[in-house]
Structure formats: C-alpha cells, structure tokens
Length: 275
Image 1 (tube, one colour):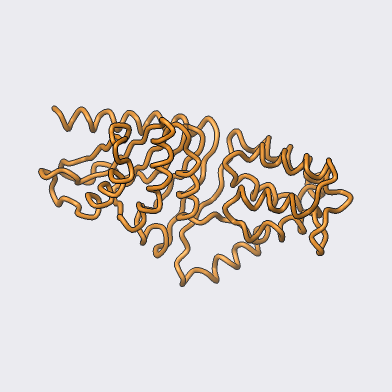
Image 2 (cartoon, rainbow, N blue to C red):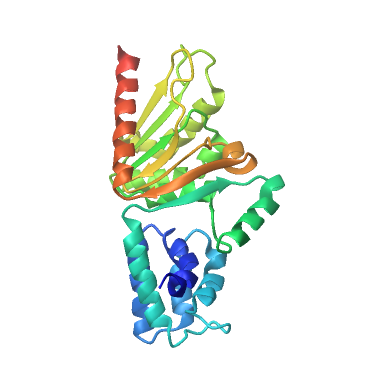
C-alpha cells in the first residue's frame, strides 16, 4: 500500500502548505468527483499553497493530471486518497523550512532529488509571511533581531488582523532607552508595525527584554494557536535570505503549548518593565 500511495506524497506535502489543508484537499476532490476540469483543480490548489510553481508538476506526478493538464480517470480516487492522507497528517503535522543562500542552492537541489522530488523544504521568508497572513484572531511575532526591510512584508497582514478585531504581540529585545546596546533596527522595525496598526495600536502589544544579556533568543511567528514557524532565522534579510537557517512549520495542538509559553514570556517581560 505504501508504494501505491508514494506518488501522492509530494501532493500531500504541497496541500499541507495551505492555511486550511483539509478543506483545500476536500474541495479539489469535490471538483474532480463532479466532473470539473484540471484547470479548476490546479487553480484551487495554486491559490492555496506557497510553492505555486510546483502544483502542475505535482499533480502530474500523482497521476491526477495527464501531461496535457486534463484530469485522469483515476483523479477523483487519487484526490480522495490525498484528502485522507492530509486529514491524518494535519493534526500534528510539521514541515521542514530552510533559508538557502546562493552557495547552497545546488546542495538543496541534490537533497530534493534524493528525497522525493522538488517542493520540499519550504522557504523561510515565504513561510513566515504565509503564517502571518493566515492569522484571524491572534498573531505573535517573536525574535531577538528584527529588521524593517523584512518586517514591512508582515505589516499588511497585521493591519488586516487588527481591523478584523484580532490582536498581535511582538516579543523582542533592546527597545528601551535604558537597554544596554539599544537596537536601532529593532526600534525601527517595531515602528513599522506600530504604523501599520495605526489607530488600532491598542490591539498591538510590544514586549522587550531591556536588561543585560540576550534575554530572549527564540524566533517564532504564530497564528491563532494553530500554525507556527519556529526556527533559527531572525526576522531580517539575512535570516530569511542570506544565511543558512533551519526551522519547521508546525500545525495542530503542539502549537498551543508554544503559544502558552510565548504568552508567559510576554507577561513576564511586561511585569519586569513596570516593576
């Protein structure tokens, strides 16, 4: 059975990139079962995932599409199987996320070919943006080093969230005037987020470690206690584009534990700042 389902593995990995992977897989299955077209299935998945350029290739590899882009006779069954695999994976799912600098591009290609084909791992910058954009009620942005040129890419998601009644928390370091080695980059990055919040700034909570030492070192972007990036990459151009970094995209109940920890850290930083 494992060999029969193996061609579906890249498609399942692709569907798991969607903010609602089970719903996306179900909708694709319904299209095929109702006599829809390959274009409709391709468009649906393309609009939902991060690695959009891989959708057609992955559907052909899975046997859902033929080389002309039309649904095969087996497409409804194959998509139903993929739907079931996604549903089994999504509760405690995770995917590898990497920042791959230019000198490691060839190594990534070799790794990908040796481990099931293209599409994996996910890209750090794109994954972080997708997590932020998926937030509907709560967003947490946490890193010791921020940079305005990357944070600006998260600003539209923050504005949309706050306008919809959601809340956001930023956890970083060295913002205060009393902080040793106050970080101009962090201050400017937080200013970008405050500007994006505008009149809704009361919904944006900013917490900073302003004492000696590094204080906080985790790098996390978390949405709605359901989806989170956690890894080594700071939210800077280097962390998301120039340095070799590794992390994971988490889904399911494990995200709640991470969320609770971040809330505890934010509460303690707030207490220390007013003590």
